[in-house]
Length: 394
Image (cartoon, rainbow, N blue to C red; front, side, top):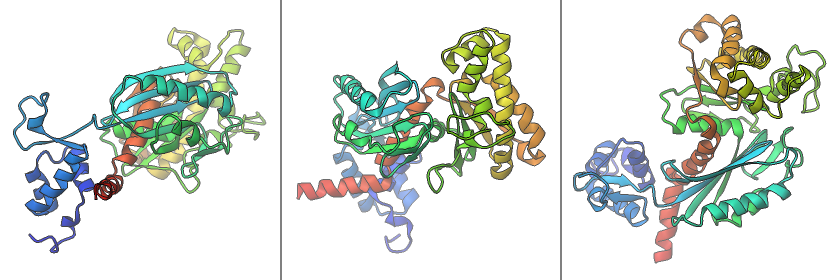
């Protein structure tokens, strides 16, 4: 088959790498068969990928367990990505290889209300400390924040949780750590990315982050949808029948005002008990505290009111529940199911599954790593890197 007889042979080196990373190809003959490229074209593209460090031949690696000569392996050690998940009261940092394996991590609490000027320099210092024993180059940095973010300007644009962060550029703080591209998404979207990166069989998902605030990542046909202004899934500030209860966003009657983790903590403390964070309340619930369990279940019911509408509109295959309240999965989702099945259509819920977050407490970090990896290993990014490397050699 000639290279001009079909569109398939236009597959670039980046496309070939994508096939190998996806497990669809393991040799040059596989690549020829899948793309229709000539043997010469495949050999040339593979050689470029090997020279750039993206691929290695199976018989060149001691750990391949006797793979046949000519097999092709993705080189996950060609680089690392940094994951930076910043929340209202803690920051999670980690270094990942290019297959998404965590190499080193660092999670610490910080004061509520801390400014980016206070926190980000310490984040940079912690990242530098983690990189001391990492020899591979940093090829990308994935960052998440609560609320709506601008993925182009790399700023928060609307975060009631993180006062003082809106409009502050984050990239300059991180470029002091590594000369690598920075990618930003909101916390619910990276939670959704972590599910896709974990190899979920589902292509249509709603991924709920139930924590201090409430957010939702929307996955349609295997892609995370951000929406026109990056505000898709901002369910926490949907107005519901919650009276005149004030919300942290400045409005009244938002879902968060009765179902967000901060509202539950206030209610729990008003009952005469004491919790400093929704994580504490979840701990009490798991230990059998009746008040904490009731609050979590009621929060799930109220979330279900809004979630039922999204289920009717989007018809997902599964609902993934993550975040701090997701740790008490059975308690929390019992309330969610109760309302969802009462308010959604029978067809929309016929095959619907409720699942805990695949990566648990590390889901945000995995999602940030996935954000960076998906960008730097996209076919377009790989092809651009190969072209720039070729120009340097010339």
